[in-house]
Length: 296
Image (cartoon, rainbow, N blue to C red; front, side, top):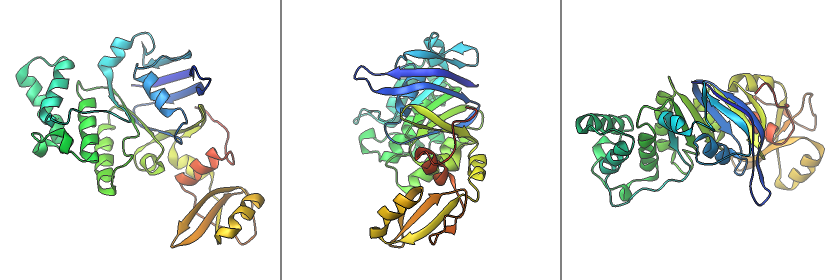
């Protein structure tokens, strides 16, 4: 199913503009919505999940008006918010079974089959009788995906799903999302560039309520080919280089400070050409050094 967002806007009572005429086409498959904290991602997710109203604009899931036909959307929706609570003294099986009842699975045998299947899919079957209060962060996120998959949803929205996970759990979660996204529309909201690079066939970058860029990750990387340069500097030199060049990122590598700049020509000053990646696309776009909003 295709999700079409047109000129979606939301301003809060305190005057903060969370979304400003956001327009996106989100096809079947994994779509990454990448942006810093406070960019408007969670506001957009809540509106799409029918949990919050917008001020203006339209959203269609195929022929379904998401803003007006909310009950129909909820039947097709699976949602994993950034923060969700669980009952710590209830087991994984008990709570997932309860959610299945709320989803309309009244037949006990069928419900058991569905719940067992989702616990298997999320690699939680062996701990299904363990209380949720004893789950690790990664296990809780996988349980969140299990409840989001109840009812065989066609649109799945996951908001910052890998934040706080250790590397092993992140890989496990990536594999799970990849399997889910083969035949469903999955919208992944994150500030972690590697999540999008690893999982998504299409993406958009959002900041301060505006969509800055969208497209296929590899094509966006190809567009900065030959425009990323890097060199090591001392910490004391960073400010001077930021004044002279379009520095898009600064990080430590083996204890030394490495800066990368965006420039269509050789910037000189000791810089060497670097192979660009999606992180460079992201930082250059957020910094306003590269690209203009395109065909979103």
